Image (tube, rainbow, N blue to C red):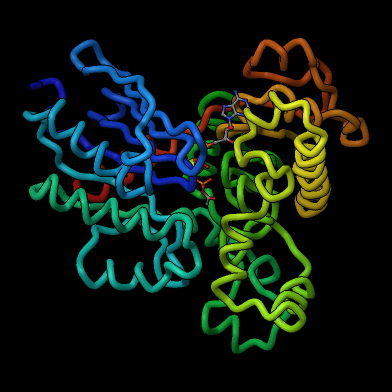
Length: 393
Ligand SMILES: Nc1ncnc2c1ncn2[C@@H]1O[C@H](COP(=O)(O)OP(=O)(O)O)[C@@H](O)[C@H]1O
Ligand SMILES: CC(=O)OP(=O)(O)O
Ligand SMILES: [Mg+2]
């Protein structure tokens, strides 16, 4: 497989998915994804150049038992399908960089130990990100392992955007708002500069709506504010996560209901959000297809929280020039985009329903003061670029 000599492989473990791509410079040779992890229909899809074997099949319950078992399927597939590929580097999305990690780093044992200490702050991601690094070290022993952090893009936030109103010692020990999905927002910022440079410099809100969901206010291409905070629990309603919650609820659960930390973590990370509210599924496709009123209520609450944050982030930016939808739901769900954009005339936003129905790239009507765009994210491409840059020094 000479065409992919000296490639960069990227592994991106999300909360419901493992995405992977193989790049040669900026060209993607193969694109693979296990999605629906944690649901009843986990699936493996692989596509790419003509010499790349394809895959499109359901994963067995054993294969999809956990992220690690799905990762083993991916690594075995790569090993068999690309025996001659010379992988120079494996780039990894690592969700939490904590206070100390920003720029991409080449991973060593000490760094892995540091990243392991952040597992309690990102339990749906960090353990799988670290497993990915360990598995890739074994599968590609000659490749350099590079970690890229979801928190990095938000590191320029002001003190006011970063701090919680707790005694200062907590900020000093790292209890602060970090923000996540930064690799995705960085990609959106770069892509905007390519496709709409005059908008890229202005006030933009990007909504990354996937199994994890957040929104990011950007100005001149840089992150100003994020709906996610210390952990990837805060902000919007997600597949299985509650999003913003009154801390009084947590006190009630501990003091009146006698729940301990582990029970509360399970409740907030695994059993809440769309899944907890609908009692049907964490998966937006299933909720949209359902005629159960609980599915409709879960969707309405999901959208209500997005609308509220849209208003809040617009105030942070002092106005709005563009709204970008991305992530699995943002890229594909006509219903959610339409519900979010309905009734936003106060922003000067005129929504083009026909363009939305056609899944077009531009979703605002001509003359709209806010340009609405649908931009598929490509976290793997961003990570491949960073890994290549790092190993080239
Ligand atoms: N056509 C679609 N319509 C509605 N939702 C969709 C569609 N395709 C994917 N989704 C939703 O996208 C979510 C997964 O988003 P994704 O960004 O891939 O996940 P992750 O957060 O694990 O990276 C799921 O809720 C899935 O139902
Ligand atoms: C940070 C986060 O929630 O990521 P994902 O959407 O990939 O689960
Ligand atoms: Mg994701």
